Image (cartoon, protein in one colour):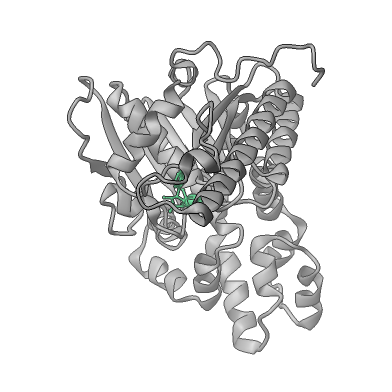
Length: 381
Ligand SMILES: Nc1ncnc2c1ncn2[C@@H]1O[C@H](COP(=O)(O)OP(=O)(O)O)[C@@H](O)[C@H]1O
Ligand SMILES: [Mg+2]
């Protein structure tokens, strides 16, 4: 950024810029790597929109279960539950939360697609099915997208907020529909479905090279019974794969829709901020709607003037050595706050008209509704 240029306004036009943008959306995908506060920000935004009178559902598959605690969602059963809103909600607003369990979600899909109980039981008992259903790799994205499709189609919500699975790179989320489709429609699958196909070691090796979520698991299994289970699994799942494919295709179109928005959550660290910029570039390229970046746990601004060690010394119980330490700590905070401020300016500069929203590191825990409400003013600014 050139020194003469005034810093871009960081928080849009000041008054509820984020909420204004969210108002035009049906779906908000909250993206970012793990540990940055993604689940908290997603929940806080969902709660805020509900308080503003919208019917909101927040979908999370976060294994940390923070959101579950915050919203009283103790059962991990893949059903949405209504959260009691704190006093002061605008009329018509409601909040539902859903903790997605990929295993239950897949079972539900089987129950919906396969009509006879006998056939359903056969699939549930299949060991390959059990492994696939309980594996987290790929399955989370898989099921989150299928569930998003169902929630959206249901038409019961004005806004669905998706706390996406933590991805090393946000690109993974964008590419997941294609990855899933490639797997479902891929050659290896057709090989399995060839009439009378008998899988031997050669077959296992043939699929072992792929990094698809299910193929990775299959490459580890050996033994005649497993081979039988595998062939059976693919036969039994044929219809289910078809309906997953249909859903994933709709979700892929949903990604491109102007009423679907993406929001990054990052820490103020260099790497995290750079990832957000890369993600923004990717979305620009695809002409998807990048709403903005929430930089979370920003060092709070230091007061304009800090007390010197001399001024501190002599205040009740503060001796010279304590005064020196307090002063040094204040300077550390000020330096960090300065670093974070310039990071935010850089980010705002790099991401065009997208919002850059700064949320400070709060001194309180944010794992309950009051905590989520405490985040709201920063998100609203
Ligand atoms: N702005 C904040 N100030 C203080 N604590 C925060 C803030 N944002 C998140 N946290 C806390 O950090 C932890 C991780 O947050 P979480 O939302 O679960 O992260 P993620 O989903 O990215 O893994 C939680 O204990 C949460 O309460
Ligand atoms: Mg999380």
